[in-house]
Length: 427
DNA sequence: TCTGGGGTCCTAGGACCC
DNA sequence: TCTGGGGTCCTAGGACCC
Image 1 (spheres, rainbow, N blue to C red):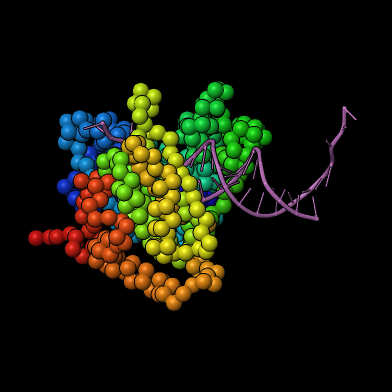
Image 2 (image 1 turned 135 degrees about the horizontal axis):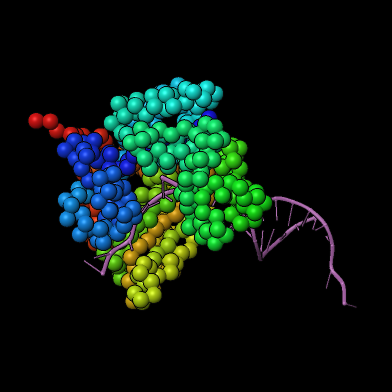
């Protein structure tokens, strides 16, 4: 049996942990650039705040009901996430039985716990996590990951009745649950597949489970579709996965705080994103061989598109993989010159590093001269200082000083658990 | 009128996830 | 005026090989 443990309104719960006055009160957390709402407490949901609603649209409602608003505080969420996952690993007694799936979710391998004990086991996990970390979670238990996600969906949907734990151990329980669940709420069914399915008159998870595997293969992304149908039928087709040692791609992309027309501003932003991406690269001891850059212009014709114009991107394959910021900034900034068009207004840009390899296996560059040996030392020193002091004490000149394009983040709480200067104070 | 049968590797793009 | 950011997996199709 497998379980999925999912933190309830994670970002909101994290904010409330240090603001006990907000318990039982409506809270929302915004995406980067304070763009849209990415987490809502139950109270905020009940007041009608939509998921992923643009902040400016939800604002009247927020003011009307005095809902508390926070900008994203990823230092805080990252640290609390780690505490939750550590608790799960401790409870399972074996880290390999816990697969961290996202910042607020983990799959757990419950092994052969007898059916009648599953609910109590899950409840014990739920209560321990809450007691040790202050974060409340919901748990779905079933023979496959997809059914566990479905169980979790039902647990969250009716917290009072389920106490945030749903077990789908028998086939009868699974069928009943699937009949109650719309196909759009199945894990792995997104917008495109949902449209196809509904056109065919398939509206419930159960109906999807009765589709022939061959149909799923031909219409829902090949093996992905086959696996999905099998999982709904209780046949495990997605194993527990080993923790990913290192990422296969690293991206840093941001909306601009205000739209940008000047190429130098874009270059500064790209240089800054490249520095950030290179930090991530070094943290996982990788080096990148491919760097790509994209910029997104604002749509000129507002009638046609409410969002953005066509993204333009291009990439360069480097002669040798590298993890040093200055070697990456140069090609990145060059790419901007090829993409930028005079007279256009841009609203977003990003850098992606790919072709990643372990940094100890970088092929020696035949033409390397003395100073290159010290690159790594220099980078390590920069990373250490930037981490222990405040962000970006040390940076490359290409990143700029004024940074008019920097994203908005006006309502961020303190980084209570990761910065000494921002510790919680008790008077 | 006729035009093999395998392979591999790479990239772009679609779909999904939280 | 204002709509996020960071990932993964899979497939199709082209280039190239013998």
